[in-house]
Image (cartoon, rainbow, N blue to C red; front, side, top):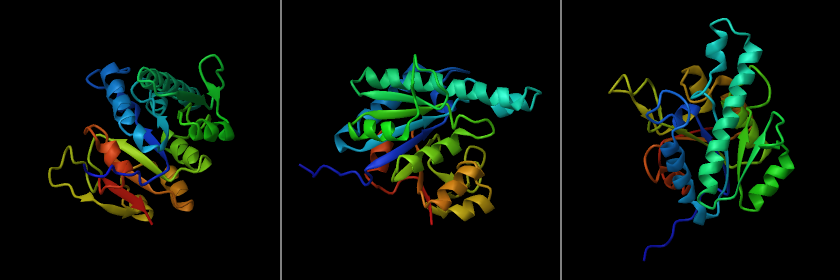
Amino acid sequence: MPAKKKAAYKRILLKLSGEALLGKQSSGVDPDVANFIAEEIKSVADLKVQICIVVGGGNIFRGLEASSKGMDRTSADYMGMLATVINSLALQSALEMRDIPTRVQSSIEMREIAEPFIQRRAIRHLDKGRIVIFAGGTGNPYFTTDTAASLRAMEINADVIMKATKVDGVYDSDPMKNKNAFMYEKISYIDVLTKNLKVMDATAISLCRDNNMPIVVFNMQKKGNIRRAICGEKIGTYVGE
């Protein structure tokens, strides 16, 4: 029998967009997609890697889009944060249906459905083998869930941010529109910023650069990709120094 592959990372932060949960729906959470993601995460349980998750809320409400149409930006952003809580609870349910212990920690206090975010408690959960889902963004308007993912990755001492997307990595142009788009295997933080590549927003990339936090961008829609990424296979795009 071939030797079982070992994880290349001890602790990761998985960043999911809210749109990733849409599936074939126009809005909301597609249970089939939530179940697929849960199965993919379950497939790496034997690797003993500690996993925390940040999920966006764009499948339910986009604060920036609403504010561009006249809604107060602060109110719109808080509504977007609440959308991330809905997505986090959906993922928690899908994971726990597979006997994967999961905790949701929210930056916005709502004790009936989620723990408040406490850094030491989050790390304790991870050390006990639980998955932690960070909801509510940073808890502040004007910051995206990309920035929240970068911030939480620093706070829990993650080894890497894994940015799940629907394309294979980081391209020089939109591969959905340009069949000749070039995919980078490796790219620096500064090149992501200067080339204005849509990996994560500029604040998130700058935070990762300042703290030397690597990012792996990969296609989550392909079965087995998260396991390959965690095992350190050359998959997707590596963003770092």
